[in-house]
Length: 421
Image: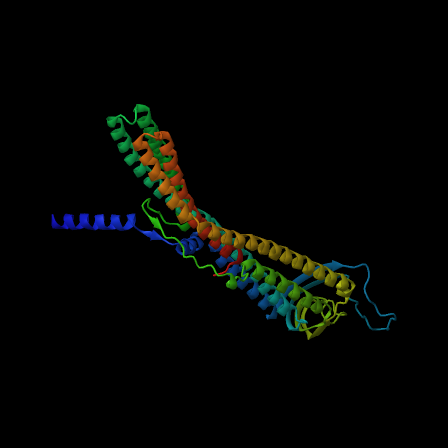
């Protein structure tokens, strides 16, 4: 029995903790980054890089080649004279050969080193694109998070309005008893109460939908009673530096173009290597001997292909053209982010100026509502007019709450635009 009581107590405590659990925007962003399926691609990029580097490095290992051939030719080499008493056989017209060649690279003109550099540069591009895609996830989390915060503020104001309307309903009931109001006035208040309740149902449904979507992003179930912590207002215009991952992605693409340009030199450099050939065939090295025999040949080989010189100029022009295209893409991105950050900075300043008058507007609306209640009590104002003033006061409070959330949302949108802490 004691054990059951302990378990029940623990369950109640756990439920209370979950109901009052708090989430932070930074925590949600971190959870979304680790939960999003695309994060698994980081490992694949690293594996591909390792495999390609390993494959390129194997170009330094000895290379084995097995070849075989069987041929028949219409004529063979013969001595131009006949020597009496001596029968000199010529090589056979049907020839056979099986050969194993082992070659070892000595110097390949830097081709393997260029392949490794290109592999690293390509991996940096893939990783940069991955970071760009993952970074875009923060904006989606921000929109959901601030959407919930805005709904929370609206729910708070909705609750206050319901409480005000409840008090007004009681006041109008008292007025009816004193002959100041009639049933239609009470019905008007009842209609506003029902409208406010319907609005609350709509807000709660929207909040639950937003919570469900945020739960999917962060990979954790979020209880309906979870409180979302408001981010701090840490806006400093002096610390605005563009640190978007797209810029590092552009740098990686530029690095790849530099590697491609450097690798052009390796195409017209000579290659040196060692080789050993072991073969079995007819004829062997003694071409006048019509018999199968084994033999080997060893030596040093040099090859020098000048064919790449024909296209070298155009290859360089193509790389330069791609570099200019990349610079244009970078300039367009910087232009758009600068324009967007300027707009968001202006919105932040505008919101701060608007918020300076919110408290005064609410104070005046409270005074107007109180005066309206007094006039209704004195019979100089209708209940409908008083309801209008109550609604106006609630709207002023909603506007203040909306401005507070919008200010934070604009600040964090600016942080996202520039990836600035």
